[in-house]
Structure formats: C-alpha cells, structure tokens
Image (cartoon, rainbow, N blue to C red):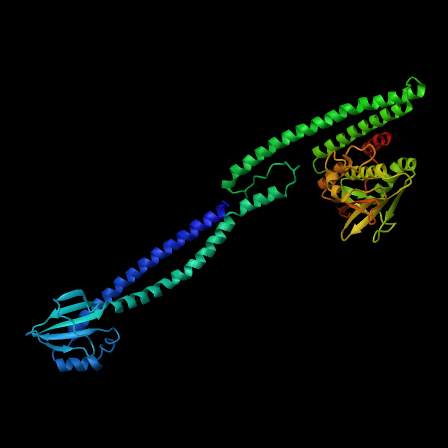
Length: 466
C-alpha cells in the first residue's frame, strides 16, 4: 500500500539512522586521532624522563612517580649506548629493532607498534606501544562520547513518529469527516483557520465537487417533485370524472374491467403521491426539531386510518409498553411533519398487507433514555431474505400482494435517516406478522405542538382516497 505516513517515517528514520552511523564513525576516528596524539605525547615524555643511569632507570620504572601506569599502557622502553649495544629494556617485553629518531609505525611479529626514538649524547632511547592499546582507548573514549547519541536515536525516532502522526492528523480528520457523512449530505466543508495551508486546495476542490453533485442531485429531485406535482392534479381530476361517470350512468362496461381500471388509477395516484413525498424528503435538509407528543401523534394517526381499517375489519389500536404508561404523553424532540409522515406510511403499509379481520397495534415504547414506537401486525410478514431489500425503492418481493408501489418503507427509512432515528423491521415470533420499530427519539419536557397540520391532512386524504 502506498502510504505517505510510511514513506515519511521510512525516509526520516532511515536518514536519521544513517546520519547517526556517519556521526559515530566520525566520532570514533576523531577520538582515535586524539588518543594517538595523547599517546605520542606520553611516549615522548617517557623517553625524555628516563634517567641517565641505567640502574636508576630500572628503579624509577619499577617504583618511581609517573611510571606506575607504564605497565598498564604496555609501553616498551629500550636504551642503546653510543656503540649500539642494548644496555636496557623493559622487563618481560619483546625486543624491537632499533629505529631512526622520531615517530614510526612498524610491524613486528604480526603486531603493530607505535615507536618513538630520541638520540641523546651518550645513548639512544626508544619507547614503543602496541597500536591495539591505542585502538582500545579510542573505542573507550568513543563509547563515552557516543552514549548521548545512542540515547538520542530512540528519542528522535519517537519524536519523528509523534511529529508525523500529529502532522497527518488533519488528513485523518478530513477522511473521518467525509466517511461519517451520509450520501445525502452535500454541504461544503468548512474552510476555517484549523485547515492547514497544504490541505486548502484539496478542501476547495472537494467543495467544488460537492457543489456540483448537489446541483445535479437537486435538479434530479426537483424534476421528480415537479413531475409528481404536475401529475397529481390531472390524476385527481380524472378520478373525480370517473366517479361522476359511474354515478350518473354514463360509464358502462364489464364491472370487473371497471374495477381493474379503478384499481390501477388508485395505484397511479398513490404512486405519484409517494414520489412527491419522497422527492420532498430527499430535497429537504434537517428540519428544526420541535416538541411533539408521540401519544397525540399516535391517536391522530389511529383516527385518520380508522375508516380504512374498518373497511377491512382490522382491529387498529394504540397501546403502551412499560415503562410507558397510559397517562404518559411522551413528548419528544423531532420534526413533527416528518414524524407524522413516517407513522402514516407505516400504518398505511400495515393496513394494506394485513388480511381482513386482522389486528394492528401502535405501541409506544421506551428504551433507556429514548422513546419510540412499534407498528405490530399479524399479516403475512416478510421473508428473512427480503427484510433489508424492502427498504430499496420500488422493490416488491414475490411475497408482496395488493397494489403497493414499493416506496412506502423507502420513505420511512429516508425520514428516519434524516432525523437520526433507528428503523428496523423484524418478523414476529411464530412466523406470523411484522413489527416495524422506530427508536432513538429524545424526550423533551416542553409543550407539544399541534401535529394536525393541513399538509398532513392533505397527504392522508389522498392516501385514503387511493
């Protein structure tokens, strides 16, 4: 996977590690050169400090001040007289060939030595030291110098991880913001001071894309709404003319054929009405929440659908499930019109698919700190494989009977999504009937508004006439 974070961390950490290695190598060589200078100075000082008397020199080497660490530094001392005869050498040390005056680096018996020789009037003094001693001290000095760098490396890596993570936080925040948006949220992103300069061109481009998508989506919704609105009036007029012709006897024909024509006309009117409702819900942004009484809303809905239920002999009632009591008015904060449309569609859908003589209950519920309601019927239910698909627009499974258009539950799901509610469908135990549950309504203590709006009455009248 091509990741900016991985690339940044890889380059920064590898670059810092490489720089640390180069710095360590340079520090070691610097320490080695400085140690070499110190040891050369020590060889020079030892050579000059050797007494003229050889016997005295041996005594000084063994116990004299300034020579107690010569053995630790493995310094070899050799003295030749002016005839070239070796008259003194350090105890238990190898004999090195005599070299010219000054500093030399030689190899003897596969051991490298640093040698310093000085010619004095009566003798020639030569001191030497193995190179390995110098390298050991150089490594020791380098380690003492490098330990802060070794401590700095993990600290720097943690700092790089922190800085890169914090630096990419706006990108993750932008991704989370876009991922949390619904498909219908096409509002532009806020371009305030918290947006880094590097991300501003991306945010501007996204806002431009969202604006174009919103324009295209709005045009589509406007077209559907306009088409549904234009079709509703002539269809209503056509139905009135149909009913008038039936009453005055000017429309004659096979009763079964006339019934089919009327059924199709009713289905067309209902489809247009649902398309108009769906277009309005798609086009409408989140409406301001008001205080709504679920009980009053339910009583109104039960009253509106009572005649339609009586025609099929369906027992339609309002109940409460503990801890909700019959005296609880169940005030909630929600969009009153949208909640009314949602409930009407659920009841209308239940009445259409519940057989004659059935039963439908509107149950007010409470779960923890939220209120809700359930529409429970004893109809045929929905096959388990179609429970999620029935929320798709125009989907009607093989089980569906009657004259539905496949939009009722889609409208319910859209309203629930817009208001942040949870809408679920489940078959009742025993395989008979369906429960449509809506939850997530926050309680509210304010006075409830009047939900008996003209808009809801017009919508319900059209549904009843269909």
